[in-house]
Length: 381
Image (cartoon, rainbow, N blue to C red; front, side):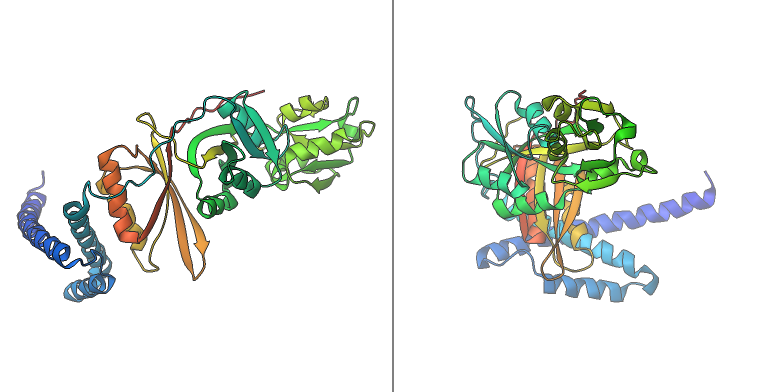
């Protein structure tokens, strides 16, 4: 090793030893702070005080290190709050999720958005097989049916591998307070579907959901067809089936929808991205979890200031919790709400501690469910 580099590293090691000694002293004092706050019933977080400390530390540092000084200080303050919460509340707080209910075993009913042949129905079949399924007009209708106890479960899409999050569903999760209890991925395999005897040269008008048109853009390019939007692809196929003798119309939809209406598939698998798939979740009025679950979904909001989100995520890092997904949704007042999927189980004390410490940094955090990831994608014809 270069002798100059060795000397520099020796200096850094000496500084690190001093830093850890000072850090230990600071944390010892934090123990005293926690006790004073316990006796006086004082909140752990004090944003004004934290900003004052951060500003002072930045002033003490060199101007070229301003960003690094802020990060260092905010990390130190997060560790301090982490320690205080551990001393004051560890194993003494209410559960982050209500007790798990026992899943119903018979007469299970499931709602989804759309009609028979919709991708929502396919997801329902993958998760609930032969149980009774009810198609409803909208995503909100599905949530309402679960909330009112009319069905045991609702099945809704939450993200697509190509187009990303489905914002309306995230908003409805917060609005209705339903819990995520399962998930599955459904491969999207669009086909061009028409009445018996129709050929591709006969087609003049195509029905589908707008997303179906977008996902099959390459196939549609250069074809002089009228594109008519529908509520979903299954409805589009249904519209074609209503005009049995009309060979000038077609729909973009699933093979299952074509089979249900006894229609022909003129061109199979016309989607641009052959790996396209949609993630569906099952929602219920109460959580269902056990030791086999490996995914936790949460929603939280943070203060509108620099570094606020990083402070929340810091506690997941400290607890060794990996985030598999995070999404933001705008709220009123120029604020944002975040949705995240964590790898772990709510019954794991270390995971629970990490979530609680994150909660201390953001003020509002709610666990939406703990469930099995079920990342295997069932390829269907």
